[in-house]
Image 1 (cartoon, rainbow, N blue to C red):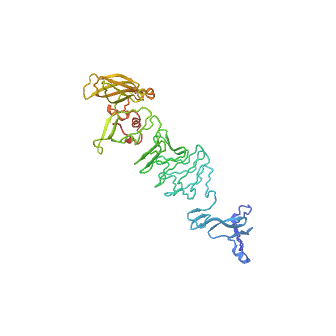
Image 2: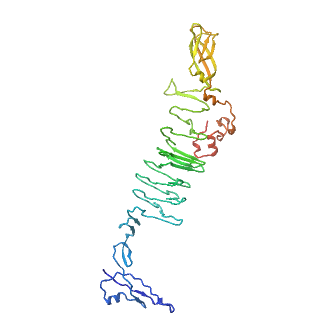
Image 3: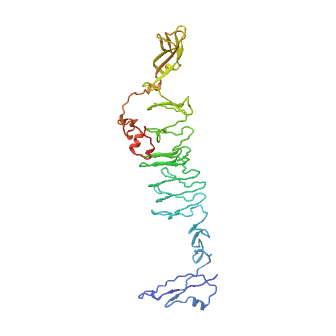
Length: 467
């Protein structure tokens, strides 16, 4: 083992006004195997006016080129885990690939930033690239917050992306909140997107839990906003709770916009369930488009109110090129209509039977009789409705008679839900179902349409005005 001694030189200028001589000595030595007095004298010669002091001990050790040394004992030096190579620093790696490269296989975090003050534990800044990139087969970057007011991972960007996660098969960004009031991933933006997900073939934003995705919008904003050119704007999946749940104090809970379907609901039971003062409100965008289209049977457990009504079928004379419309028959009563023909017997009489449910469904009957083929001035209703039949008489034998009977519903539902023919508008006084017909502005419309125009809500141009 080679060894040598280094003497420290003390300048005469360290002597101050009769004070004791202060000797400062720095000892750094690897001992030499053999020493010649003449060589020691030459190697340790003091400069002008200096005082020579010998080292009080020797430091031994060995090292590897490029390794940063460390004290392995009181008087011994060896390699540390830090390497310097080509102006790059490596921890746990001999050939660092970046300005600072840290490599290891421990189960604990490779880099841990712990700040007991109010600053950041770890902060990454970049003028044009990524401030922090985490790459791992499990979790690239993990942020944990132990208090109730902090953030596990916080990303801020004035114009681009605060936090960006990318993965080929796993999760780009994963947020986990163990407490009942915590938030797994929270995105906030003053003008851009708080949280944005983009995926060319998979799921842009995926939520799984009691609330798969929770969105809250304030001051006219949207709780959850999804926009897609071809696929689903927002897709949520949950095993038991709400796949997508949006709530807003003043704006829209869930707002979907797409060139295909804005909001699409599909389920084994109910595709879409809506509740509120108006469960579902639909309006066409413009022109002669329709507010609602149902491709199957429609059931209404309640009263159907409409401005007008008709059937629409393929025109029987030109089904490939035209439609045929007929208006509904309107009445102030909940009226049912029955009609048919009957042939009079040899006495000029006939009994007209009705369905077995007729009496249980109807009351207050009205009759009309019309003779077919010849006049029948004496034709009359010989017996009113009794046991679901009535009797016609006064005609000629063999005559065919056209008959019509109407009845007013008195079943359980009709009995408890009679139609009010006239009703005061109450809180809707001064508003109109069809304001344009009375030269009133759009904001005077009754219901959601008028409210949207009055509030000047977003995307108002897409809400049709009844013409």
